Image (cartoon, rainbow, N blue to C red; front, top):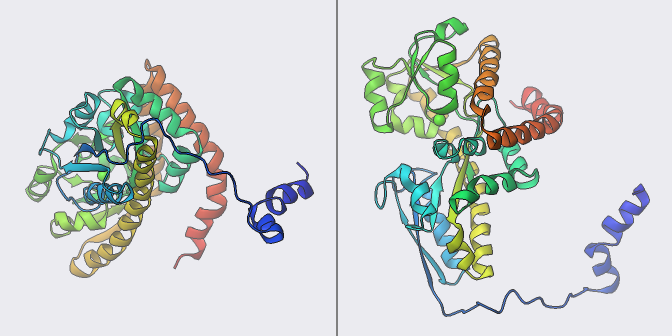
Length: 370
Ligand code: CA
């Protein structure tokens, strides 16, 4: 299309110009659906979450979302939220929604790597994409269609549910100046990041959230990652660790999720289905905004209330971990064609948008941010 034609079709031919020239162009009213639209029917759903009830940000969003859905639907879709362990154990949420014991869940797809390996790419992989890029891949880059394909065999439909943004690299009681410093390091770090640490000679330890503080304090572990300043401050790590390292190379933008039982979702009238999806997109915005706002505030508190030294991982350490990540992921996706397909798509998208991010976001961060 020539520039002139583009302008004509895109702007002059669009609503703005025609509305100005000839008044509003009203389209014929479209009926949403008539077959199963019963405005008096109230639908009751249960939502199970992988977080403790009202856990800051990620747990709060479940409650907010069901409030929005209640309001938008005029009370026609009512959802009760159950925190992890209230209806089913946190990590059984996926199964509970899959079999229809609950209609909706809230969590992060990398928890379900044991069910289907390909799931983990929809939360994050080390040295993956940041929040903006993940949203771009999922919403506009074809990633969401793949996500639906991965959840389909479980009778589940995924929805976006927020992003933590780039996390912190974690709390350490020894300095990391060289990749060799990771040798023998006992660190609480889950998922693919843990596998990468092990390749570097460290020991990835899996302990539950409630035991991390004591383990670090008593030297059972040498380091731990968690999320970012807001949650980390509440965990109290600044009182017992010497160093707070950045960046969270292992979680560069962890995408969170809602998921619905496909049969239950399809039984809803179309307008309620649209309301559910719309609410998840509002959640997507709120979670990242809340994380950023709170992390900025709590970073300041950590700096002013403790002697913790905030440090960057040396570039060589990050480059080395990046190489080990590539090896780890190649091993992960071998013999699993669906993981290979998702990773190839993820990688191709990342390669395509990185030059754009480097030209704009990176230059902005490097040179303009004070
Ligand atoms: Ca984390």
